[in-house]
Length: 430
Image (cartoon, rainbow, N blue to C red; front, side, top):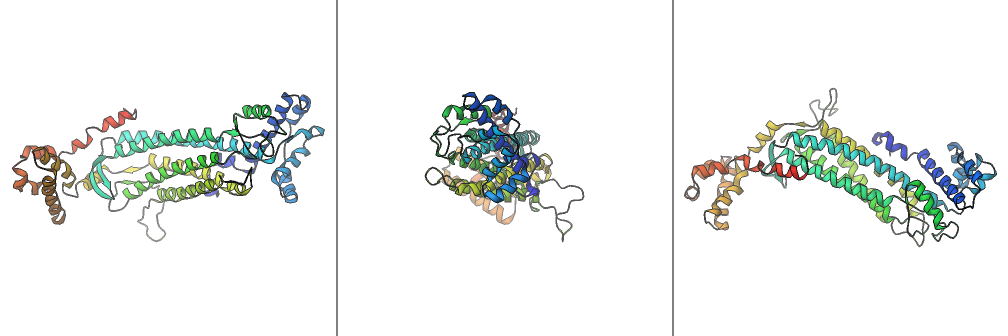
């Protein structure tokens, strides 16, 4: 991933050193396991603890061998004496690659969980802040009925909590190692060695592997990241809509000295939210590639390898980046309750149409007749831009059934807030 969209801790996992450090960690763990079962002398295993590689040498050897693992092993051997013969004993390259990749993905998931926890904390705080702030709810982009801005945000809280649960499951799914030899038969490395290695690394042994850990695990993991990214896109897109000039109910932070356009100095664009929406598409594309990698030939082929060198770093780095970005957006989000109230009232009271409908039904009218009365007045109010309540007060089909006091009660915004606290209590926020 390009530096522009990378944060240091996550990017470090996917550097060449980050990969090779974990390869060496796996190789040493295997040697220790062999020593535990008596295959490798303990004194040799202790010497191998001091093994190291030189990155420049690895790159130089790789240019000769055209094989990254053999190049790595050659550099490691340079740091050892005769005991170096025990390194990679009984293994195939994918034993090291897949097990080390599990460590990388597990470490990446830990960072992502920290990101989501930070975002959830901000969303919970701001949801409580605007719990009782009325705004219009929209369906199909059109005014529907009132809600509160805090209730909108509380739904985001709930989704982020689900995302945390999904990520935890995906992390568990990917935390499997594989030390089973060329086609997974354990012919050259017994199951007890695999179990010891995985236990040492904090992984579980893949119950039945071929030459690779089955790629459904990786597809599950990347698909989970894609789903989290899609949720972030949904939230960012909402802010983009609310920041439109005609709406302007909320606005992402705009720093002193920031510019929105090279041509128009007045512009304050939702460019951060737009960036989140764009990068979420990239993550979803990586998920598709991961699905394609599930169907490998026989016990393995190498078609997945080239793609995973891109998709694993890019998906984790991008999700880390956009989650942190959205946390900053929500922490500094400008919210305009007065504008929300103005927008709430631009339809001249039409938001109460369902309450009028229900009240008429309760007087004994059929739903069809009541609907026709309310729709007739609603359309007139809409076309003439005149108050809905005034039309109802002048309609004998309404006033013969609903008196002024009843209509006053119907046209009360408070009814849309009466159960907001219940939703917050369900989330444990009250």
